[in-house]
Image 1 (cartoon, helix red, strand yellow):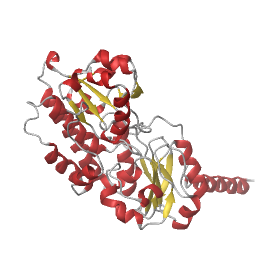
Image 2 (tube, helix red, strand yellow):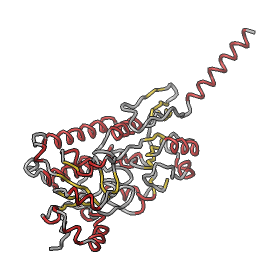
Image 3 (tube, one colour):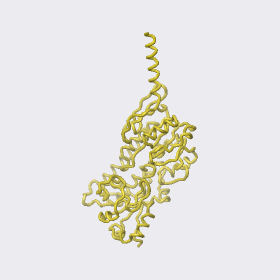
Image 4 (cartoon, rainbow, N blue to C red):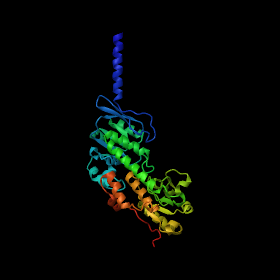
Length: 382
């Protein structure tokens, strides 16, 4: 009887060890719930990481090949300088270079030569190609997916899937910090990760510090219209708590309606607000042009239009937030709204600094060629 009990105990321990080698899930917090990735090393050459959803995933101790799918994942690989580990690419990154995703001008040619592993996009759903992934057999799949989609893809492929989804809030909120740290831990790029986050912190401090002494009464009111978020929008598409405005302490008129993030306001409401300065996404000026042709008197009655204070503000969201573009837009907002406080800053020089730091190259000319421009807009055509 004692012998049987001992054998049963050994068998139970064996099953426990087996279960510990499989990636599993735990209750899923909101993105960013993991501020410092938890890592547990095993004696069999594996380790367990906790992703942004609180999922515990067992991965090789040393990761030498990865695939990035979903919102923001390829971008983080570019920021962390680990594109050499990437062995497959999504269709939308392979098909053509687009500056709408900041890493594309630098890496599209490389990505286009890789096998296809998914459709691409920012929905958070699982649109990867399981059979292709099984054939490639990367060590880890890093996914900008929901927890459910990450579980689904891991079940389909048998390959560890670590979720690194982040939100497009502010300039780079805590969900981005958490996701980048998870990604960096998987690929061993912790030093580069902390350099990036320290740089973002320094930019935020610089932006806020420049306008800290400006009296509330002297802060101009601003409106961001024709924004791109979950698609293109006309003049009344706007943001509350708009990261570039918040970073420099501008008064965002769209904050007054109690909405969170992107929303459609009323045309007449913008007239009531009558902001000092208007920014419009240059990628949606065709939509604004159609509205202008229909309602010319409306636009002519806006004070910012009359005074020539309408400026471009390129979109910084495309399959997740382009952190480099968001920071650049914040400096542009400062240059326009607080010219004295930002008198030593030019958008060209700041673009060269930010883009080179994040991407290794100054892609400002590619941005401009693709319509992501910084300048004035004459809606009256005078």
